[in-house]
Image 1 (tube, protein in one colour):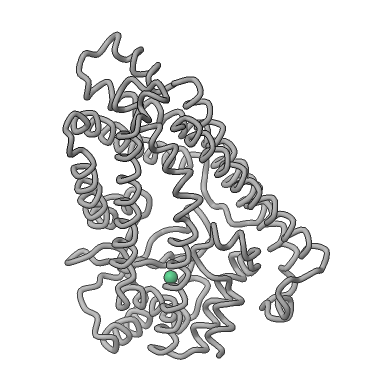
Image 2 (cartoon, helix red, strand yellow):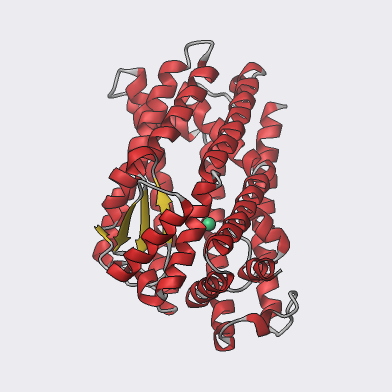
Length: 408
Ligand SMILES: [Zn+2]
């Protein structure tokens, strides 16, 4: 029964995700033929000339995502079908004695496997698709450096996770230890990302534009927000896409503006983008998302505990704690995709609309609309996805929806 459920979840999730991608390609194909499921879209676009480019760019991105999704499912099926985690552990066990080390090194090898199979897709995204549409500024050297740093971070986390799991698995209260450790880990990550991880990828410098800094300080004062340091990230070494975000907590709160954003938007529009980000802060979206994530995680860990209690280990012939962790991860990942992804993304899209409203109320609505349409037009990201695809993959509502709601 457990084995049947495992393969069923994996199969249904894979078929569902592939179907969603194919539906999205059909949706984009219809628009290419001039059939617009959203009335008023072509007229609403700021530059009608980039419609064909936007459609072609969106199609390429969906195809890449489909390639990555398929690669990961094929890997998961192969790993589970051939009992790869236990085979790797046995090989490592021939040279290493400690259970913790065997588990950690198995995690490292599996992580490397996923990383290397996904590398060609990352290469295609950067040097084919992004370059074709004029967004890519990454050199091969920077790409290699970024991927290497990513690999070191990911393998370190995989090593530590399975090492730790092998240690706690011998105690009956392991689900509780796992839950508490994950909560702590995510909390630490929020503190560490702006101070340690971000500078690995971007050079962060204080904002030098005095006029803009003055306007931003005015906005912060108006909103009663203190203790934020404003930085400019040299994103233009990699891409032309513009962005801004807020990271950290306590005394290490940072507003990060991409230099690509500053070069394209007027000061009022930059302030509008910032007001949106500050909206997330003021409305406590980061904390709410963390609580939601914890709730989902707690449910998933409870599922893992039930699987352990109801013979999952015996049914799938699992021989080690690390193999159990990998199988459970694969199963729960499929379960999460089917059951929780739409819920999490629904909350995310709701928060985006709330932050837009906050920005429009804090500044003026026109600047917010202007900034939104300029960024999305520059990024070729104007096209609304089909409703069902957006439910599973869109973190933000479409620009059309955001502007329509702001105009109401
Ligand atoms: Zn946002």
